[in-house]
Length: 323
Image (cartoon, rainbow, N blue to C red; front, side, top):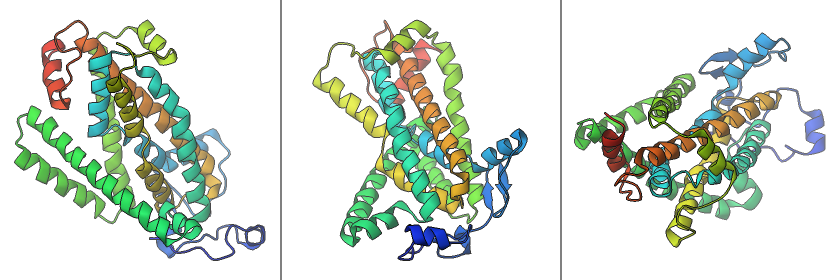
C-alpha cells in the first residue's frame, strides 16, 4: 500500500531539489531492488550500456505489461474470441488490429504514472478528483472484478469438466491455489506463477496449425474491415464484447500498482514500455489465433454459426480437429 505524495511532488521545484532515488512511497517495501521473475536489478545500479546487460535488465523488468495484456485472454476472452470465429469466421480480425494503439496508449500512460509517482491509480484519482470519485471508481472496479472472477471460475469449471474433473473439485482447488499464490508474500513467486499462465497461451499454437489456416485470408481480414453476414445488431454487440474484453479498466489499476510493487523507477521506463508493447502484440496474436481456430475448424460444418459456450466449442473441436 502506498502513501499520499507530499504536496510538492510533481512541481518543477520539487523535482529539481529531489534526490535521484527519492520517491513518494510509504515504506521500504516499495523502494529497493527490482526482483523480477527472471532477474534482479540493484536499487542504485548504473544504466546498462552493453547489449548483454540491457537484455538482462529487460528480463528483470518484463512482467507487468506482458501479464496485464495476456490477462485479457481469460475465460471470458476465450469465449468471446471463439464466438467471433465460430459465428463470423475470420471477418472480425480487423477489430483486434484497431485495439493495439488503444492498448498501448492506455497502458503506457499508467507505466509513466506508476514509475514517476510511486503510487497506485486509485490513489492518484483520489488526490486529483477527490474521495467521491475515488469511492466511485473503487466500487465500480470491485463490482467489475467480482463479475470477472465469477466468469473465470465458470471457465475453470468448463475446462476441467471437459477433462472429466468435477466442478466441485476443480473450483475449490483453483480458488485455493489462487489465494495461496496471492498470499505468499513473495512478489517474485507471484510473478513466476503468472508467467506459467502466460506461457500456457502458447498451447494455441499447435491447435492453430492443426486447423490448416489460410494466411492470405487471415491477412486480408486483419487489414480490411468487414462482417460476415452484414452489420446486424448481434454482430455489433459481439464487436463491443471484443473491445470490452480486450480493453478493460482493471488493466489500468493493475499495471500501475504492479509497477509500484515491482519498484520500477523512471530510469527503467523504456524497458517497461518494451514489455507493454510486447504484451500488446502477444495478446492480439493469441486472440487472433483463437478466432482463426474456431473459424477454420468449423468452416463448412454444422457447428458454424451456432456458438453455445466455450465448453461446447471444445467438444466440437474434438470432432472437427481431433482429440
